[in-house]
Structure formats: C-alpha cells, structure tokens
Image (tube, rainbow, N blue to C red; front, side, top):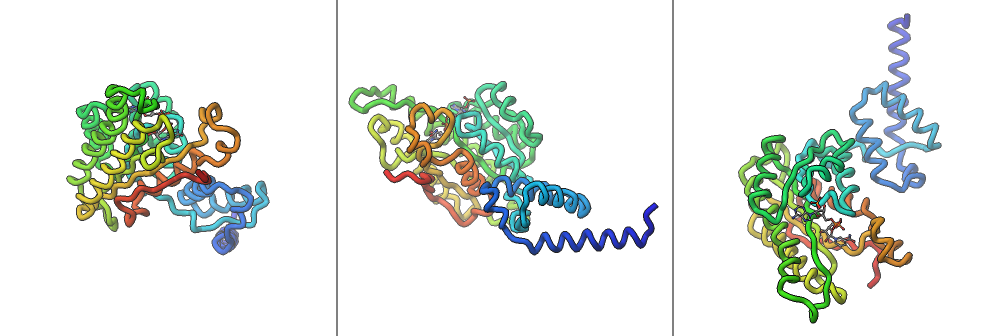
Length: 316
Ligand SMILES: NC(=O)c1ccc[n+]([C@@H]2O[C@H](COP(=O)([O-])OP(=O)(O)OC[C@H]3O[C@@H](n4cnc5c(N)ncnc54)[C@H](OP(=O)(O)O)[C@@H]3O)[C@@H](O)[C@H]2O)c1
C-alpha cells in the first residue's frame, strides 16, 4: 500500500515533469513536420489527468526521441463548434473531415448518398452523416434544420461541394454553362443562404466575436482560367462574389464569409493528370484542410469577405 507520503512525493515528481514539459519547446517540429499530428497529440493530452499526461509523455518521448512539444498546440480550434461539411466525400474532403474532427468540431456531414456520408463518418464519433442534394434549396434547408435539431446551433459551414464540366468555350453550349452554374453557384447559394439565416437567428457564443463562419472552396480558374476551364471558372468566380456579398451585407451581424481559392490539389486522383513536378508543388489535402479549419474557426474572425489563394508552390 503506498503511503500518503509516497503519493505526495510521486505527485510532486509528476508535477515537476509536467513543468519540465511545459518549458520544452518545439524541437519536435523538426522530427514531425506535421502540425496536425501535433494538434492531435495535444488535443488528446488536454483531456487527460496529470498522471496520464506523464505516462503518455514518457512513452512518446522515449519512442520518438523528442526533446519535447510545445504547449502552444495544446489548444484546439473548435470548442465543440458545430460545423456542416459538404463535399467531404470528394477527392479532397477526407482530410478536411479528419482535421475538423481532430480540432474539436461536431460535424454534420452531407452527401447526396447516405452510404457515402456514413462511410466517411465511420470512426469519427462526433460526425453525423446526413443526406442532402444542395442543388435543391429545400434539401439544403432540411440539412440545416436537421443539424439544428441534432446540435442546437451552427458555428460554421465548410462547403467543398459541387460538380462541373471542362469544355472549350467555343465548343460549349448553354447546357454546359448551366451545368457549371447549377453545380457550383446554386449549391453554394442554397447552403450558404440556409446557413446564414440560421446563424442570424442564433446568439453569439460567450467570448466570441462572430455568430458563424461560411467558407466555400472555389478555384484558381475563377481568376485566371486555363483553356477548357472558362465555364468552370465563371461559376467559381460567381461563388467568390457570393461569399464577398454575404460578408459585405452581414459583417455587422457577426457573420464571417470567405472563399478559399484552390489551385491544383495533390489527391490520389491527381496522379493521373498532374506530372510529377506539378504533383509535388500542389497543395496536399492536409494543407487544404488546415486552411479550411482555420477559416471555419473563430480564430479567423478578423478575416472577412476575402478570397484566400491556396496555390501552395505553384509558379504559373
Ligand atoms: N481537386 C482539385 O484539384 C481541385 C482544385 C481546385 C478546386 N477544387 C474544388 O474543391 C472542391 C472539392 O474538390 P474535389 O476534387 O474533392 O471534388 P470531387 O471529388 O468532384 O467531389 C465533389 C463533392 O461534391 C459533392 N457534391 C456534388 N454535387 C453535390 C450536390 N448537388 N449536393 C451535395 N453535394 C454535392 C460530392 O458529394 P456526393 O457525391 O457524396 O454527393 C463530393 O463530395 C470542389 O469545389 C472543386 O471544384 C478542387
């Protein structure tokens, strides 16, 4: 039986180690150049008792040969914030779901097919699959209403959804144009509008300077389309302007709306259409995810109505 004295000594030792950990800095970053990994470790640690922290720290420290980690990563971006994620089932979106979840969000994950939403949510206890076709305004309204029913509020919308068609303008038809507009503009409008109306009805959370964030993914073609990307780019440009319009009209109401203007993304699928050099330069899905998570969080309250280029190392 440990005596009270032993326990006190052990606790003192434990606390001393924890203080030491607090002092140690990010040498670790050099061994693990992956901020997400750091966030994950620290998010987990934040929920453990001092004793558990000590145990995890020793195993982690020994196995990785690390000098320490930075306590600055102990916090996570979301405090149980409720986020609607649309387009997460696509090529880029899996990393975004993982990042939002790891950062402490509770998620409503939308897809047109229940099975896809369920598959994506598997293993993420705070993510709930939902079915929505955002081309249909009623379906977007239902997604928002169901999210409110489930979670009580909506802190952010991250919209990566949409589909388009790439065709030279000279060969295109109004149907091609319509397909791009329906696929990107109408879907973004329906979801943003339903979300905006819900956000405007809810109070600010304690200590927050925003009521809700809307982040929609667009594309570099919205500013400078490559050949064949003109109609796609026109639709994405409209989405850029829609986000700016929402910000302009509702900044004063605590709404934050931005567009993330993506260049090429180094997805598995991109291996078939990007050469090795371009693939190496392209943003990784994790890089995209981190930017989206930041812009969906109240950490980015001060950035409003912006088009944020995420074109990584692209030079043309
Ligand atoms: N991949 C790139 O290199 C790249 C580059 C620049 C910009 N972007 C943009 O980034 C976003 C994600 O790209 P991605 O490559 O991951 O796209 P993707 O693989 O084509 O996936 C499209 C996503 O949109 C969803 N979606 C399509 N129509 C929808 C609708 N009517 N209602 C609800 N959901 C709908 C799909 O969900 P379900 O099929 O499950 O319903 C799927 O999750 C897109 O906006 C894309 O334009 C991508």
